[in-house]
Image (cartoon, rainbow, N blue to C red):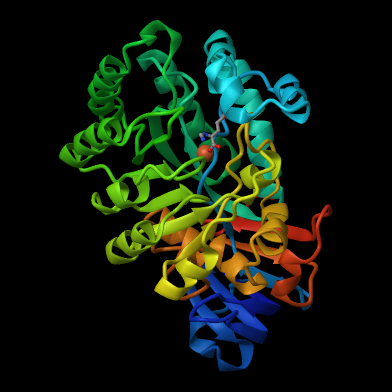
Length: 403
Ligand code: NIG
Ligand code: FE
């Protein structure tokens, strides 16, 4: 028999529809891992609540959908604080990468780390996200860059979800950087990335495929080859696009019906139109913008004007965004990118769900997953207002309280 629990005396922000979807004195009926009913308590049909139903009194607290971090690189070895110092002294992210630091230094540290070390550090990071209401997160590979290490990182990402009661979507980012053993042979490396893809997919480790299309990453032609392989295997794609320059990556990805294009500071009008036509989500990463001290803003007005859905994610990684607070990203999305608090919160709920191709979450509505967070807040716009402290009281994922 599935458990039935009535969560009541709550202020709901359902995010179902165009606005906050506020419901005062709301109730959520949870059956197993699903929301069986959502609405004002007074409208709840008594027949749905048989005797024996468990009850949880939320004492007027705010409830939102569980937050979704749609872009992280959570599994890696080492850290890059020294590189941060170099950048503060004037070196650019690109210069450090070209000098063999950057992603490559994390690849070396990841390859050298044993599974237990990688798992323990990734678990610590995922716990930080969960403590702020995150119930679904995406984790990319991309610091292994050879079959056995990409496999290890993806498998550890999966284990994180199981250990913490979270849903983890894994993304294969073999085309993140050129590993040293392929120096001067980037096309041969792309051959290898494509050859590993069906193996990793067959092992159940890949939900989507990503690439870093950039002058310090891979060319549009190489990215296309990765996407063609993904398409043959039926895997959805997404792209690190237009972060440092305009490579036309967003339009390329949209041609493959990409779930999302991420970063986008250098996105062109053509790229916006292509994303709109393909239904591709724009994932903004204010943590990377902040930490790399970028000055060029993503084209928010253009995205809005064309109706491209906007998500917001942490991009947690040791080089460009070592933060572990999705709430801080909401604040930054508003202060740095001028998103409204509603847009920012939609960006970590309903639009983030879309960026991961998961229509069964990101809102509070009957039939969806019972993923929600309880907050010591009066109104959901406060999620983007406070920063540096955590007002999250409880986290429920798939109907189970996990934090
Ligand atoms: O999303 N741009 C490429 N990938 C990461 C950074 C990775 C790193 O510096 O280690 C990003 O910003
Ligand atoms: Fe990233």
